[in-house]
Length: 125
Image (cartoon, rainbow, N blue to C red):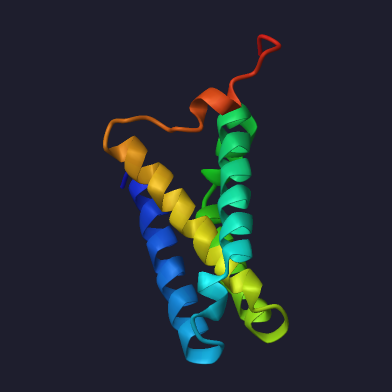
């Protein structure tokens, strides 16, 4: 399976669990909070820029066996803790996954990653 498809499926699964968990416990409020959306979009964008800027190190680590699944489990674990202690963070995690899925959709549609221009290094590396 193409790693992009695998990662997209994991992100969709994670988003579904976060949405269901939030709606069942704390409601839709954290998902609709503008601050949560801003933090989630910014966080996902920064993470994506890091992967684009340092692909040798980060992609090599990400492609190791079980790392994507462990990443999903970490996000879901953080979401579970957030429901208890800081519900707005569930919204940020969900918006982060939505942002990743939107970027992935651009790549899969052949448009390229919109953040690739931002991630270019100016020092020639």
